[in-house]
Length: 114
Length: 113
Figure (cartoon, rainbow over the protein chains, first blue to last red):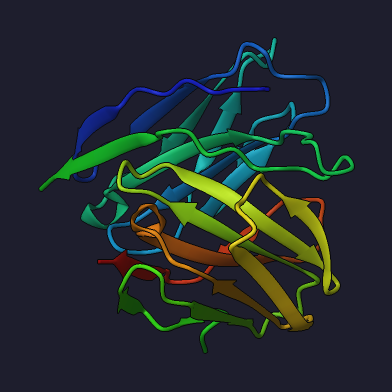
């Protein structure tokens, strides 16, 4: 199984950039890297995904290492609303006829200080 | 407009009972999922349906039976509830099986006494 490793928690101040790391040393060549976040008492929310190149959207940026064994989710200016658990996920071909099975780990709990 | 909705939001019941959780999506998506998030906050996929057809069943006990009457609905029926079934259950949907962006519902907190 392609697995990810993330720090349990990170802290940031409001208005400052946040870099959330993820290690995925066993990633396969076709695995996409996805990031989701889960705000307190809510369902997970898609943030961004990428394969090889860095990606930007309105929520965040995703920086992917050249060897693809790690990636970093970048929140350019953290707000209090960004306090959540951030999950780094790889697509995992499972046992059910090749369908992709998303595997959520523990994620990183981001604390944002005012 | 709610994209993925679940009912009920909270469900408290006794061991041995049978209960259902309903899920509806108004996004026109082909694929729907059920996830279970336990007390340690691990989120694990249970089932996935594509165009009303079961495509993923992740070693979930037979007491759990998903039903998809149409592409917009995926309901979860649980027989003979056990204490260990207490968790938050999330429904989700995506445009297709290829799993790019999934949209999650607000969750149903099930407590089995």
